[in-house]
Amino acid sequence: MVGKGFVSVLLLFLFLASLAYLHTVSVSSQDVFTGVCVYSSSSFSVLSNGSSEITVGKELEVGRVYTLFGRLRGSRMDVSRVERSSPDFPLEKVEGFYWVSGGCYLLTEGARIKLGFCLNVSKGSMLSARGIFHGRKFYPVEYRQGRVSSSFREGLPVVVEGVVMYSGKRTILWNGTSEIVLYLPHGFKLTPGKRVRVLGLARFYSIPSLLVGSKGDVHVLGYATERPIGSAKVGEIGRGLCRVISRNGKGLKLDCFDKPLIGFMARVGDEVAFRALVRRGSLLCLSCEVVGHREDLPNSICGGEGVVRVYGGVEWVKVYRNGFGLANVSFDDCWILLKLRKSLKVSLRANETVTAYGRFTLYRGMPALEIDSGEDICSGKC
Image 1 (cartoon, rainbow, N blue to C red):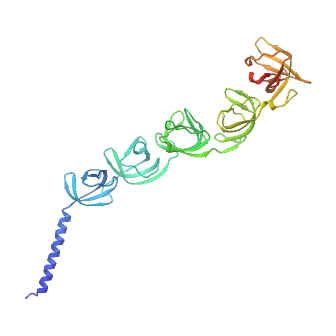
Image 2: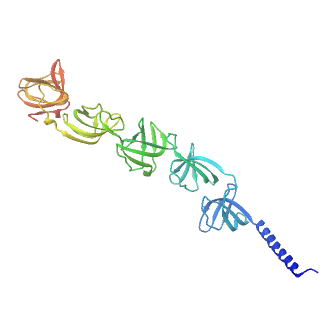
Image 3: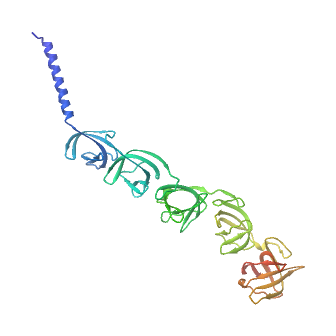
């Protein structure tokens, strides 16, 4: 006869076995789906594994991979459990540059791939990503960030650093060896002489160019390197104290440099202290001041160097048929010939007292003064 204790143990064993069986049947009867959340709202979300998609009545996070447990009803699942997981489906690999412009993209040579969501990575940086395509968008599941390129490739992001040389209709940057045109956002301007770092899309027009989409893609680093004018190179700021030796439509010609100074007005003979940006064809005044007025120059009718001031009385005047004239001006025991080009539109008379500013030269072996403008000769002591 079997004991009551044995029967009790047997019944307990059978009960537990039946529970385990029922649990196994319950679990095995559930549907399982793993995919990337490609859409989410407060009432439902859509998941895809690249080949099929499932809708669930839960709010999930776009871009995350989830495994769903529940009962499939067509393309919809009644879920009993949702878990964050790793993909168990094949991923596609895409490499490109991360770009933000009215959305987030991966830029490759010849393609612009829109992302299903934006990433927390640096704009313009190289990205190697693995994920799925859903519709016309790519959903990265995993990615590795690289650096922003410093090499020009058509249509791709590039970062450049240099000095602003021109600003206005065209903004031009000097990177130390060549010029780059910047197409900046509307109404945004940069100051010449500033050193900047700029991110944009490379374009090859007449010269390398950069399309800059946002003010935030431009970082001002400070001013260009500053040196004495004699040692300053293109893209640097030169400082000096020089005298104006001539003036024309190109700017002021100085006695210390071979390029005209533009963006500032002074007269022949004035002494100018300046800080100027050295460009390939000119000096652009950044801060300039007349510190020595030409009226303070001594009377150099007896001889001198460079630009001088000459004061004296007119002894005689001769005008040739072509309109060119000569005036002999004397003071004490010294005399000089004033060369009067027709374009000066100046007429002098004998016994008139004049002051002239110009450069010493020779006329047929005789001492003479070259005058650039009618403003550089006046009646009396001036």
